[in-house]
Every structure is written in structure tokens, then in C-alpha cells.
Length: 228
Ligand code: CTP
Ligand code: CA
Image (cartoon, rainbow, N blue to C red):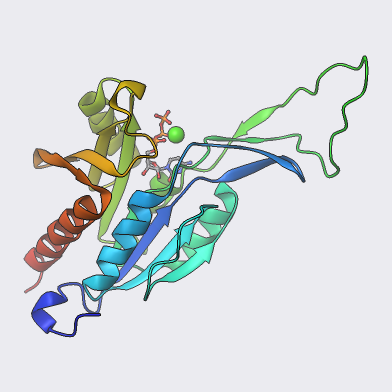
């Protein structure tokens, strides 16, 4: 860990990050989930800690090593993730990198569903999960001063990201193209477009670590601007 004050632009700041997928149970042994490695969120947590921030990482189920000097809180479902985020507030910056399952199973079984010869296949009834980013960004009290979301899109990347920025009430959206042709899903690189009220900033294609470092530098600059 660096000790030089200049190298720690986020010293004294609390940065809250969500990462990974959520798992929504069908029964005790089965679940539905989004595709997510958690790599980008974990890289951001590591970069924020490196910059001197106190970091809380609310993580869905992933297979990654926990970053050093980061308080990791493991959760499974979207509802658990929202509760953990609310408990971890207040924060100076909140970054929602998790690929939250949009729906959960309303009729989840308490016992393992058994196959039965000749019987109909089970029907899953879905119900919408809470939107964690939108819930936190629309808070009237205790809203983190800088709220950042992601938009993983397979088409109309910028238009969809602009719509999400407005709808979710966040300050920045980090948009990226995850259409199968890019091969990006689950990979080690990322091509981000930072969409905010100031316009669109196209970042180069780079490793998730370099993208994390670039994000932390932008956050440090933005937070610094507000200082007296
Ligand atoms: N997000 C969240 N809680 C949810 C769904 C999404 O916090 N229940 C956050 C994600 O972490 C991300 C942002 O919202 O930062 C955008 O997620 P995305 O799935 O792209 O947007 P949705 O609004 O769910 O729209 P859709 O999946 O239909 O594109
Ligand atoms: Ca979604």
C-alpha cells in the first residue's frame, strides 16, 4: 500500500462497490443468474484501495481472490445485495458494477424439485427484483454525492446508456458493448464510454485493471473539484 499522500487521492473517502452476479434461487440447489465474472468490479475495488479509500465491496458469488485492504461482504440474491448496500452507507462514491438478476423466482421451492416420470415440467413464475442503483440514486437523504452505474449493452450502446442515466438518476454511466461479436463478455479487457451530463468520453480498449485506474483518476478529479 502506498503511503505518499499525493498517491492517495481518495484518502478519507468511503467507496462502495457492487460486483458479480446475483443468484436467485429456484429451489435449494438451483438458481437463475446473469453472466458476470466480477472482474471489473473487483479491479475497481483494488484501485480504490490503492488510492487510499476505505472500500466496501458487496459481492455476488464469484471465484475471484478478495482484493487486499478491501472490506468484502458476500451476498447471493439481489434483495440481499440491496440490504447490504443500505447497511454500508454512507459513502462518498457508490459504483454499481454488479450484473443483478432483473427477476427472481416468485414460487421458489423450499425443497428440491424432483423430476417425475410423465409429470409436467415445473413452471417458473418470475417477479421483478429491486433496482439497487436506482433505489440509491433516488434517495432524498444519504445519497452518495457521486453515483456511478454500468450499462452492458448489445446494441445502441450510447442511446441506451443515456436513457439509463436519466431513468436511474445516477451521475455517470460506464457503457460498454457486450455483443457476442466483441468477445468481451467475461474477458480481461473493456472498452468503456463514460456518459454523463458533460457528454460522452470514449476510453480506449484496455485491461479491466487499466480501466479501473482510469475510473479512479476521474473520480479523484471530480471529487477534488467540489472541495473548497
Ligand atoms: N442494477 C442494479 N439493480 C438491478 C438492476 C441493475 O443495481 N436490479 C444496476 C447495475 O449494477 C448497473 C445498472 O443498474 O450499474 C444497469 O444495469 P442494466 O442491467 O444494464 O440495466 P437495467 O435497468 O436492468 O436494464 P436492462 O437489463 O433491461 O438493459
Ligand atoms: Ca438488467
